[in-house]
Image 1 (cartoon, one colour):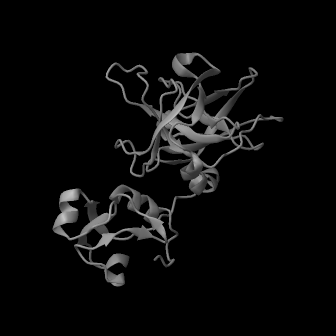
Image 2 (cartoon, helix red, strand yellow):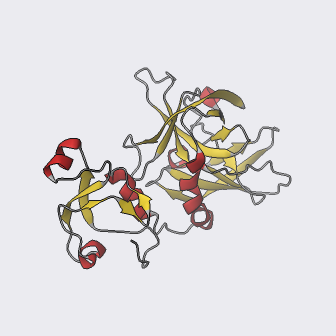
Length: 252
C-alpha cells in the first residue's frame, strides 16, 4: 500500500493515518530528496484514525513541518494538499475549505475539514497546509462514487492530532474523558417538544448507571448547550469535547 505522512521532529517521527500503516508487516519511507528508510509504528489510534511512525537508522537534517491552529480555519480559506496520490510523489493541489465539522463514520471521534483541493488514494496521511505553510489537517478520506476525486476531500484537524501526538510518539495508550450518556442532536422538532428556544446542543436520552454523568445529577431530557464554557453544537461535538477532557478532572 502507498500513503503519505508529515515529518514532525528531528527524531524521525512521522504523523500519518492509522489506515495507512494498520496491518503492515514492513514500512518503508521515501523522502522528497530520495533518501529511503525503514520505519516502525510508534503508536496508532483507530478512534481518531491517526498514527505515528518513526524512521530507523541514521539520519539528519530532516525537513520538519510546523503545526498551525485548525480552530482558526475559515470556510472559504485557501489550503494546499500535499502527498503521494496514485504513487505520484510530491504532488500538490490547491483548493478552499468547503466546510468544517463533518462526520462520515470513518472514526469514533471526527470533526473533519472538507476541502475541494484534489485528494486521491495515496494522499492519506499527508498534510493539508494553509497559506502560511502551517499544517492544519491530515488528509484522510474522500467521498466519491467513482473512487476518484470529485472535489470532496476530508482531513483530520491538526488540533485533534496535537492532543494525542505525544502519547502516540511514546507508544502510550490514549486516555480520554468519559461522561456516560446516550444522546442525540437537538432537532427543531425536539426543541419544540422540550420548550427549548435555543439552537444546537446535545440532548441526553439516557444516563448510564455508575457514571460521572449520574454522579453529577444529569437526567434524561437535559440539553447540554456548553461544555467548559464552549458552545456545544451537536452530540458528536459533545463526545469530542468530553473525550478531550482529562480523566479525573471536573468539567462545567
